[in-house]
Image 1 (cartoon, helix red, strand yellow):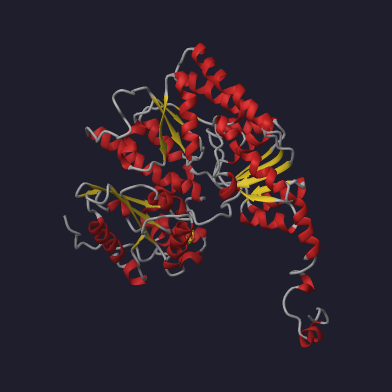
Image 2 (tube, rainbow, N blue to C red; image 1 turned 135 degrees about the horizontal axis):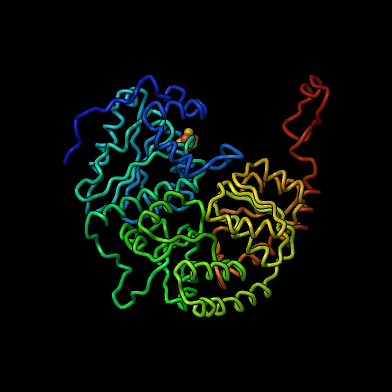
Length: 492
Ligand code: SF4
């Protein structure tokens, strides 16, 4: 099969390309709707409801999809968007250790409005679709091509046996990079589900005939040890851990769909949940963190699968005393505010509270969902103020109000904490990249938090040493002429 010569023109009246990224969300959405993307945007509005804030301040959402594609073996990932966006996205992906080349199909105003960009994308996809190298090619439309209606759904679904998956991931439709992970994970799962419906598929390498217990698929980019920990918890129930979604290879998608139940460990994977539901799989929210979280999660799983109460109780009893022992041996005695955009903030807060911490505020950039409802209820019953779709202003206000001993948050939150001499930790790099589940997770947060707390004195020494530097008249260069002109300042 070769690239067609047909040119599919986009609607030139509606292209937002002239104003590009600076056109504003309303203009871009309006353009995208008129260009034929309204159904997709409506689906995103349902999957990722906004409000109380329209758009949390986080990185470009498309990074989530790009990361999922880049971490998958035998998968090529191609971006279609403005060069500045692609530069930022590739820079971030390599900063986070991507070991793959990111494909890029450049465009200009002319190639966008004449439809040549779509033709270029189709040609690139044909060139890439080598079954010796790839199982799938993923093409991601960023803001401008989405607003201009570049129709990735018209790409061939498969070339030489290589699956072609085109998705729109505009910042004006997908609120956070966390939810953008779901856009691609859900699209791939949907593709695999249709393949299964159409006939026999390749047997996943992880499925062996001797070990055929029912599995529990796990949704969320969890720490690798967590999958092993959950696997151990499942043994007394006669179950085993299934694949983690997003998967690392295509065949795992088939194994995931073959599960008996789905653990929505990260609660924002709405499109992924929809595909599992369509496959007839039961889903459960929350996660096995701490004593109460593990007890509730195992009980819920047992009930979902109609397992005998005796077996459920045995599985719970096998875990709780060990988790309790580790929590008691690793206490956290601190007032904490916590915020992030990974979607796992609520389960982290539960674990902190069970470790003894006084958590006052949890802000998450993600929306509330069925899968986080139980955690939200639990936290609120423990006096925590939980804010979904939290803005930076919410997070900063919480820090100023609750005056924590330690603040866990995003880069600007940590920056604000440093200015106030409050020890602080980055949620993404230092908290979410640790085991959380069961016994292995029980003590893991205490170590990093207690180390940071011990540094409080150092912060105070630095604050008194640098007092005033970098603000007011102690910032910039004050020459005698400037001082004379403005009547203020200090000559250095
Ligand atoms: S793709 Fe959209 S959200 Fe991402 S950097 Fe570009 S303009 Fe911003």
